Length: 293
Length: 239
Ligand SMILES: Nc1ncnc2c1ncn2[C@@H]1O[C@H](COP(=O)(O)OP(=O)(O)OP(=O)(O)O)[C@@H](O)[C@H]1O
Ligand SMILES: [Mg+2]
Image (tube, rainbow over all chains, first blue to last red; front, side, top):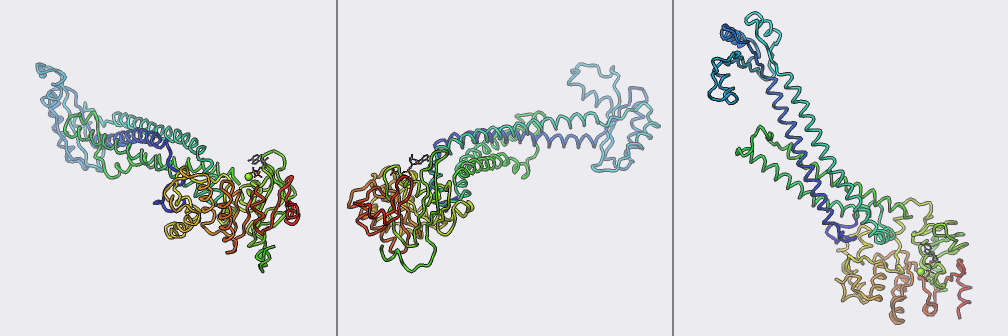
């Protein structure tokens, strides 16, 4: 930049700066929302997977002695290291869980319901799954252990898909904006050709002239991008509020507790877009200046 | 010859042309076999008919063009081989009055004049009094906030001159600086260059107005058929 920032801009205001800011605002808004979705997806799936990894379900097939077997197994499991809780879900509990699907009039006692044993593990614990399996084989030969691995893998794949899609949307939005702004920058350069040449002849260095030129494009981008970011943050905050007050089912829209890290990440599209525009405008201006002696 | 021209300065001439030719793009040579030098502290006129290449020759001095043949040395540096940064540094030491003014429409009169100071990395605020004095001198004291488009042709010319001299460059190059003003004002503006010259600035003024040039006792370089005639021959050629 030539001279202090408080002085008037040598190259004048770009008449298209409003449109430039608009493009940046729209792109940064889209990228910001997509990034919030990616963060939310990554975060909540990590939590789900963590929770699933710390829970095992043991299913004992319907049989007269099933309940007794479950009770014994639960006692033995509770004594094992790394086990936080072992709870037997008898037919009544399972019936209660199934009631919404079967209707209130279903005669549950006539259904052959298995006995479930809900096992919760201590986080980072030292649970020995093989030992548990051996023990169960003795106590309840018909027991089946479900460690939710299939679920965990499916959720992991889903999470990466969501993160990948959202990141692609964010990158595409920023790239589209940067390209559009690059085109506008070229038009601006053509309009400023004479003034830029004059600055060059007056002894302004390439860096200073390119900085003067790129500074204007970056200011427009930053202004629009800030609006886009604020709009996206407002949208995320509104969604979080709606979830908190129960307007939206938290299961349908899992929004993680946004930490300083998350909020900081949401500034990335603004910073990235502004930086990219600065680089492109500098590059275009320098290429034009190099054609002068 | 004026006394300052032969002032006891052992220094190298400020401008040296050696066997210089210039062509624009793939066109014919506009200038060829040009040799001359401007001693430090000298004042020269450059005359020649329209299209003879005066602006092109000034462009070589201001590093707006590089010679297609030969060598141009300005302020001690050979222009063709100098780095881009070195060229920019030389340009900052040259005050230019462009034939087409090249003022910045978005800046007012004061900011236009302050521009060379900004480019030199100086704070124009600390030079505000100098700027206002200078603008008063060229008769623009009442138009400080005006933008160039609101000025008359002659006022713009004076603004261009004020901008060229504000940073007190060691070399001042003016392309038709009196083309848009009446004779009395033209003379007054040339006296401004004269004052710069007395303070040690090397001055070159291109003009097609040989009558105006003849009112000063400064040597005249004449451009004819793409070549620069030596000052003496030009002096004799004058009616
Ligand atoms: N950028 C350019 N590209 C091609 N030809 C040019 C260019 N600039 C000048 N010329 C040609 O060079 C020749 C000299 O032009 P120049 O402007 O140097 O003349 P001049 O003596 O300054 O004329 P005037 O008195 O009208 O200002 C002209 O024939 C012109 O057409
Ligand atoms: Mg000319």
